[in-house]
Image (cartoon, rainbow, N blue to C red):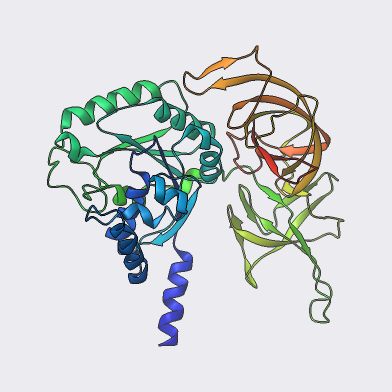
Length: 427
């Protein structure tokens, strides 16, 4: 019996993980959709369902509000809206999933950026009665800015428009005209009713004109293996392992998560910033030696030569190195009520490296309703997105965010309060 449990646990650990986020305007049904997805895929415990049923009884409308599975804050339940990012985890026989349910209100744009920053896929909901709204365009723009590889447009509340094929096709045409102006590579469209369950997990008998896959089928089968950059090897060193035991007295390993690329035993590597070179002696994962490793695995690497390497250094291929500079251009979303100061000094974190920086210039802000650039307004406050230039106290080793989402991202921190004030993507 224990062997069977171990085998099932091993199978679960080896399953592919898909991270996805939901976005859309207020009351488009994001939380209800996630509740329906969890409920119909049998990913809810009985006590959770009982708690939601009891909470739903207080509304007095005789229905079970599946949105309460994600909206846990009292203010969210009272107002029927999502305020903060809610994370939910579930699995099917094919995949594991991490869901980030993000708010729809414009004043919570920063929460969407936070929830979507690590997503493989974004689900953008559109109310079938209202069509494409400004908030739809805003969230599509943010999805493209964050380089989310896959976007599924769920046209929700089809039950309120009599499951009309024309309504669905009109919304599809309208969104595609918007998508042509932004950088979204893979877009799919699914007509659904999150409340009734149409095309969420089970196919809808009310929309026999739709011959595409259900939402869950897409989530289980969409190809994400090529979402990672497997060309440019980047390994930010997180920790140096030097056991103080007789058995491993000569062991010196460098632990961290592979940001991108593939590494094999025997590969020639370069250490930044020192510039010293060596070859990979071994790659260790959970005490087992591997012949090769790839993003996003967390491994320990040993080298053939004794080189002084510490946290914040980066191991790369000898003939494939990142950019190095102290002057960096960023697209940034401001996360703090206190406005950004041009000439202001901030602490920054980039991969495993810490530094300080000076904001040299705000080149433009983006009006994310019209996607136009505003160049003559130098104020920059909460939830705004724009392009800035910074100068760091030491050279950073980076790629453009478009090429590598890990080595191309930076966060800015207020040194006085230690609060994260900005999330930046290197241009």
